[in-house]
Image (cartoon, rainbow, N blue to C red; front, top):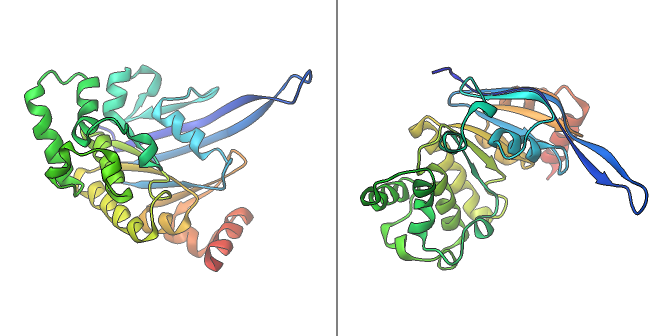
Length: 258
């Protein structure tokens, strides 16, 4: 298998937005000819302010949106040639708000095992065992199997979301602001967990974030987006020490004073 896990080439995505009554629509370019690649075991952070296009790019990599032009390959295979089931086994998201992404009427065990059912595991006898193994992997005690999301803390709910994403052992994980909805005291625990899981399971991460403290802690490389364009990309240490683009310098200056 190729070590190039994610390869996006000159990806562009436009949205048509209303200009008002009787004024028709105009085109908003959310992603503008963005190219990036992520090797096995890396964490590529995509950073920028809200509205810069980073979440749209993440949805394209997940296969939730089709680019208007350009190509995306996962593990060397064009994403449009991968079946929905195989795609879901290959790449999974971890969303920023675990409370809104978990069904409050379902138990923790049923939430985590749902991907097994949806993605075609025909052996229900193994479901509970695999769920409990994955719960242990993310630091959730087995007694929580029959509890509900509202009985858990924010950090525990995010661990549930991580377990659900990893139950079928994907190779690529899209982390979309994975700690922004958590208390500061819990954020470092989740970040350390994600780093441990990346090493232990040989995962590849695409981290979507505007929090440069999180990026500095997790990322191998950083791609900076500004109004839909990728304006800079570098190794994390290099980018934090010697940013080249004026926008990157502004972001880091704000970060250093925050």
